[in-house]
Length: 101
Image (cartoon, rainbow, N blue to C red; front, side, top):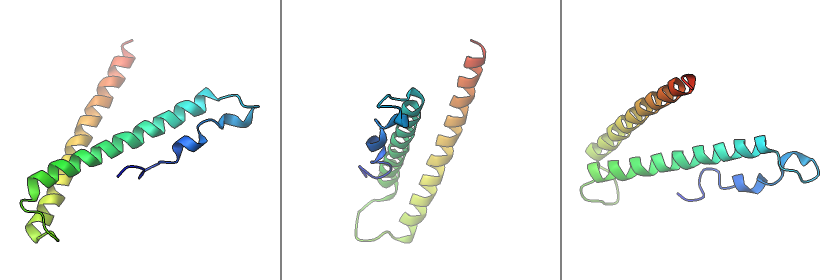
């Protein structure tokens, strides 16, 4: 999994804006945000894979049978639904707190 989503983001890190070697803080912040989003997506995928594998695969073999395939699909759907619900609630709370500052 390592090096999968966006392993090339660091290559553009110091090229900010072409202004005689000066770094553009806005560009750097955007790149950092992208890197954080990629890391979060990788972590989500890894956790989901670990949990659903442990839940659904009793005896690993060369192929998944129908019940294992259905279990994996349902587990991943439930995991993503739960993650999306938590993310929406978290973002909503952050917005409320920022509005109260």
